Each structure stands twice: as C-alpha cells, then as structure tokens.
Image (cartoon, rainbow, N blue to C red; front, side, top):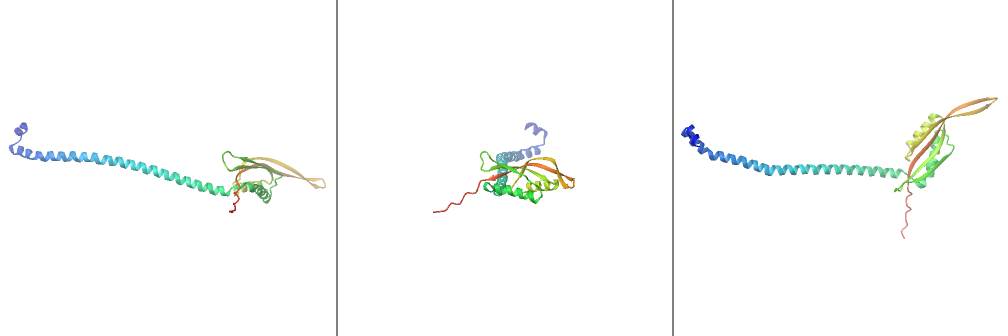
Length: 199
C-alpha cells in the first residue's frame, strides 16, 4: 500500500481505500455465486442426466412391450387360423379339390404327421405329383401358397412328360405335359377340448 500511496495522489489513495470494501464484497459475491452454482447446478445436472437415462430406458422398455404385444396378437390370429388335427383329412381333400378346379391331375398323395419338440402344434406334410398344363400348375401352386391354411411349399421338382394318344386309323397324337413333385407342409393345432357339462 505504501508504494501505491507514493505513486498515486492522496485523493486517489483515499478513493482506493474507500472502494476496497466494495471490491472485497464484489469478490465475495462472485465467489459465493460460483459456489452456489457449483453446489446447486451440478447436482441438478446429475439428476437431469439420471432422469433422461431413466426416461430413455422406460421408453425402450415400453416400445419392446408394445412390439411383444403386437407379436402375441399376430400369433393368436395365426393360431386361430391353423387347421385343427381332426380337420387334416378335410385339408387333404381341399388340396385335391383345388387341383381339380385348376385342371391339374393328382394321381396319388402321401402325408405324414410329425410331433415338434416342446410344442403343442404338429407339423403335417403332404407329398404328391401333379401333371397338366404348365399355366394350370402354376395357378395351382400359387393358390396353395395363398391358401388360408398357411400351406408352405417345402420342395418342388419339375420334369417333362410325354403322353401318346392313339387317334385311330394309325394316327397318334403326342401331348407334352409338365409333371411336378410337390411337398407341402403346414402346422396343425391340437383339437379344441370338448366342453364339460356341469353336474
């Protein structure tokens, strides 16, 4: 302070001494504002980050639950549309009728039922050959795939067949046909339980 008094005039020295408490007060104010800011804002920022993380986790869980609920609803609709085991013979007849409507011949059909591990559904497969015009077979296969019974074409092999017809008077006609070996599968749900009568 002595060196400052020698440099400054006595009036300036008195002004500095009288302003010194205000400078100290301003310094304390700035320090207390910084301390309050650090003590109040930092925990608030931490709480905000935690709240944002919790919100994001809740939003993600909610969207996963909604997706799971939609999947369950879709599976329930598909389960209801599956053919029951006791209706499988009528499904075989429906496939044969579909082929007949499209002008496709099915000389014979074999089928198999297979139990699937740890489920109540069964896998049913039908194997058969179809012969006829290519366009008719294509329509038949398309109708099989869009059928309400959820039929899936598992395998499909094609070959060309020639058929000779005797027309009489020594003339014959050659008909080119396409022959397909088809394996179709579906799933069968268990038969509905019989309602019990209350005594």
